[in-house]
Length: 134
Ligand SMILES: [Fe+2]
Ligand SMILES: [Fe+2]
Image (cartoon, rainbow, N blue to C red):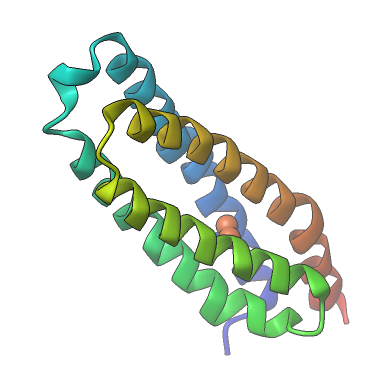
């Protein structure tokens, strides 16, 4: 059985990567794309695919290994709902026709992901740490 302390460490580590790599990547892209949206029209859906590819394994890890440990905590329901929301935003973003809307979605997504990671670090992680002490 994997130790809860190890699961907590993995969670912290993956969140660092999401903050430093994924969220920074999204910010870099929307700043650049805003300068000349039409120029980047043919690349933007690939960006949504990349984000999904980066996030999917992390979401899977949380839902399969972290959340079941804390299934009685109300925060888990909230976080699950947010995961569903991000995946649906990414699907809808692909189908969106206006480039300006796609760029706006990228900007919002970066903010939402930052808030989500913050919530998990500040509210979920302490619960996990409590559990590892019992
Ligand atoms: Fe999450
Ligand atoms: Fe997370």
